[in-house]
Image (cartoon, rainbow, N blue to C red):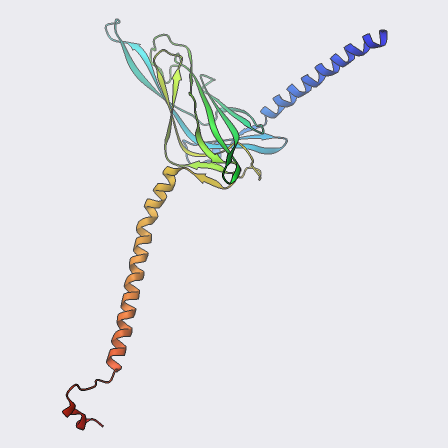
Length: 280
């Protein structure tokens, strides 16, 4: 009985130690993050890298801006009018992140944590006629902002912390094993805890891969957004049509030249039989 009584606390202590070790390991993994925005030639674009076990597991390059409506008192101090704050994600932001087999997360904080962006990515598998196919997507966006911050907000009514969340989001859908790239602007609507206010998140110059990175600090093959593909086609279509037109002209001239040469060398047979005696 004494041995059993001693063994149980030992097992409990071991279990607690394992849980603490697991928690510390997760914390250490979350701390392996880097802000490489200084390497970007675009001053509006940020570059974030999350690393676990010494290897890159999440990379994100993008420019982000948030359009936030807020109320201020009118000049009569009776009516409320709505102003708009344009909040851009700035360089030098603090970054946290975590990677998982089916879920990854990126968190960014700036202006003394007055603003915080959280992006949650999920990887899923779907059965298709060709068999199971995997995709990943951006499934949730959360933006926390402090309307008492004086740089972007001027005398906001009910100033303080507010949280804006996406609703049933499915964005940046990409085949598994690939990165998502989109230069065009994309907007995501976020419902704010500030009553009857919708925050608009504008993403541009996006290149993100939250899963299956093979080489350290290197994106996998790009999956381009439909807007970029359409713009690329619009840019290359005139060139393709010009090349086709030029080829048609060259072929036409070549056929004409060959035909003209054959016609010039051909012996003309007289149709009037009386002319035969002059031949030879």
